[in-house]
Each structure stands twice: as C-alpha cells, then as structure tokens.
Picture 1 (tube, helix red, strand yellow):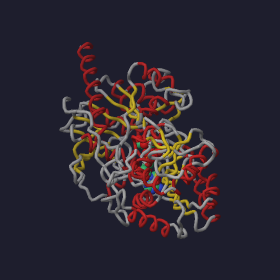
Picture 2: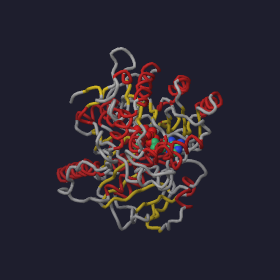
Picture 3: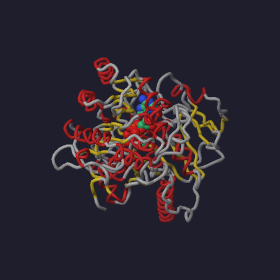
Picture 4: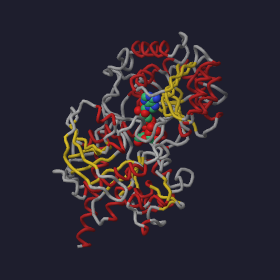
Length: 535
Ligand SMILES: Nc1ncnc2c1ncn2[C@@H]1O[C@H](COP(=O)(O)OP(=O)(O)O[C@H]2O[C@H](CO)[C@@H](O)[C@H](O)[C@H]2O)[C@@H](O)[C@H]1O
C-alpha cells in the first residue's frame, strides 16, 4: 500500500514542518465515492453452526440504564446475535426498569444464600422481541443513583457500599439460571458474562459442580471489583477458594479475577487490547494470569461494533440529516452545537470530547491543549461527567475562553449524537482504550477522531485516512496530531476525502456474530467432551 501526498493538494498546505507531509494511502481513499456508503463487507458465515440458548449477563443496558460503552454493547450485541441464537439478557431490576412502561412478568424465584437475599426473576419483552430477565430485589437494586453508585462516570466497585452483595447476587442468579434451579421454563446452554460485576458467576458454577460453558468479556480491566477478604463468607465463597489460583488478588477478593480464572474462555473487545492486557503496563496486576490464558488459547479479542441507529442520514436526533458530499446538513448540526454551547460563529474547526471524564480518557491532556487550540482558531465542546475535580477544571476552562470553549457536565445521549454530527474532530487521548465506541460513532458522523494509538483506537482508526493517531500520552505528541488536523482542515479537498473515508461504515455488530458463534461452539464442544470424560 503506497502512501503518497494527495493529488491536487498544494504541497504547502499539506506540510506542517520541513519533510512532514500529510499522506494518505491511495488505495483507502474514497474520493470519488458519490455518497455515504454504509455497505458492510460480508461477514464470515456463522450459518454452519448450531443455534444456542445463551444468557447474556450485564450490569447495564442502554434500554434502561447506561453509564458508558458497556450499556451500548449490552443493548446491541444480543440483538445482533439474536439473528442466529436464542439469546436472552439478565440485569438487575433497577428503579429505571421498574419505572419503565414495560410489563414485568414474574417467572422465577431464587432462595437466599449466605448473606445474599432471596429474589425473584421477572421477564420483560422489549418491543423488538428481545427477552430481558430482571432480578427483582428492591433492597439491593431500587435506588436513586447509578448502577454502581451515586457518582457518575465509573464502572467502579467503590460506589454503593454493598456492591459486593449486589453483584454477587447477580452472578449467583446467572449461575442458578444456568444450572436450571430458577424455575424458569427456559434454560441457557451457555453464559456470556460481562466485566467484574458478573465475575463470580463462573466461579459459583465451578464451586457447585455445574459444567456450563461460559464466556467472560473484559470491557475494562481497570475496574476489578476488589473487596476485603473478610467478605468471602457473606458471599458464600469457601475459604478453600481464597488462594492465588482462585479469587485471591494481593490479599483481596477480586470479582474480575474470578471471572478470568473460572470462565471457559475470556474475550476482550479488540485484538490490540487482548494483547496489551498480557503485559505489565496494561495488565492491572492480572497480566500473568492473562498470559497463561493466552498461551492456553483461552483469551481472544473480538471487536465491538456499532448499530444501525448511528446513521447521519436517518438519525432523528440530529437537527438535519446529512451524508457524505452533503455537508450542508453537517454544517447545520455544527451551528446547533455552537449555539447550544454558547460559542461564537466561526470558520475554524470544532473539536469535541464526549466521554466519561476520568483519568483513563486523558481529559487532562485536552485541558492542557485547549489554549493552543483556541489560539489557533479552533473551538472546543465537552460533554461528560466523572471525577468532580475534572468537571471543575472544565467549567473553569469555559469561563476562561467564553465563546470558544463550551462545557456540559452531565449525561445526555441526544446531545452526544448532535455533537458527533456537528463537530469536525473528536478528541480521544485515552491512556488505554479496550475498544472505544465514541471514535466509531464520530467517524460514522464525519467527525475525525484524534486519538492515542492504543487498544481498539489503534485497530479502528487509520492514521491520516479516517482520523489521526499519536504515539505517546504527552502533550507534545498529542499536539502534533492536532496540528495535522488543523492542516487537513485548511485543505478542503483533503478534509472532505478523510471525512468520506471515515464515514464509510466498516464496524458493525453483524461482523461480531461469526466470531462469537464460533467461540460459543468451541467451548460448548469442549464442555461436552469434558463432561463425557468426567462421566
Ligand atoms: N456525557 C455523555 N453523554 C452522553 N453519552 C455519553 C457521555 N459520555 C459518554 N457517552 C457515551 O458513552 C459511550 C462511551 O463508550 P466507550 O466505548 O467509548 O467508552 P467506555 O469507557 O464507557 O466503555 C468501556 O467499554 C466499552 C464497551 O466494550 C469499550 O468500548 C471501552 O473501550 C471501555 O472503556 C458512548 O456511547 C458515548 O457516546
């Protein structure tokens, strides 16, 4: 693949410093493409594999409650997999579930176990037919606040004081349903578990002697569900399981480690992150265990996708629909965002950050870069919530640069969609990023991501084609990428070519069906063989 300076662009406008031309791989360009092309490359066939009954277990789902990307995945992936499998979801019955208009039918009951209270299982059928089991236990789940605590922005175990009980209850419910002990008419053949909140499920299955295969997906290794060892008895965890090859992690009980240790297979949400977490730099103290899983062929990366609702031609949240080559609609969204955030009319580029405002996301770097962006004629909008200290810094930034920096501290998906549609560039200097959905949404909406070359960002952004990547999480490296973005912005033809390339949809959940299906089949066969051998 050759990298050449783009034909027809004045070389002066594509060079920021001697010898540093902005280049674009010629065979990736879609310069002559007439319109936004969302055709997917054909996904590898999954039809040769039998359909399975799968219980997808999660602490959040965008249908009811979403803190971040896990909520999106939990809503979209089971729906995509439903094309091939009988897949149902299990979530706690949070207040938002009870308050929704959907009818809850009581279908099962689970007894108390250790300090985990008895609970009931309700069944909800969404308008599109997706069946969601909800764990009814008002003392644990019906509260004013988020799924993990009152503070927004994290998947942490440091929120509600009884999160160990709340999520052990969820995990045990999943295990009991899989073992056929919940009184449901439906019994899964396989569990698909997500992040630390479900980590104890395969452990309970193992301790209770049930051979049900499970996939444990890591969406973010940094949030581990760590608790004092003295909590084991309350959660029904035997002393004999509290050791280095069980659930013990540097003297603490780790839900994340339980999931990794006892699940049949561990996945994470991009190929690069699957490799990164086997290193001390990204492994959060679990890299040794993860290296071992990788050597056994029990760790893989299956990238996230995005669903059909992310389409600028049809998204009803936007002030005006648009497509590639129809930039009037995109400009109308930019005007809306500028107006909404109190920014001045400007011919300069609009940079955006849509994110949980936490250390992972590198918002400190964006705050550092803000002065240079504004001085160069750019504007910035932020939407997000998270660490209070960061929120205050953002508010100060907006006060310092009235008309050039706008901040909304909070969570609002409709506004987030307008910002992806209205912005020219999305800033994502994440220190690590398991996959990242925001950069895919931005690309689909013609906003070019400027991102750290890590995890899923490295896998989903083509530097100089569909966005910009930089190598080191420090200001100088980030600023180089921002300077490239300014240069491209000034060269309309190149800018529009990159936008078109970014908008050409390549990341769809349909592409995840085959790899998950193949994995489900493999671990089911292995469980069957082991069961026969054991019998
Ligand atoms: N203030 C706000 N208002 C409205 N919407 C907001 C918002 N702040 C964030 N969002 C939305 O939240 C989602 C964020 O998803 P990401 O995947 O980019 O990151 P997150 O770290 O939450 O997810 C983790 O899990 C996912 C799923 O696997 C991985 O992709 C990711 O790398 C990992 O860190 C996007 O839908 C974004 O639009």
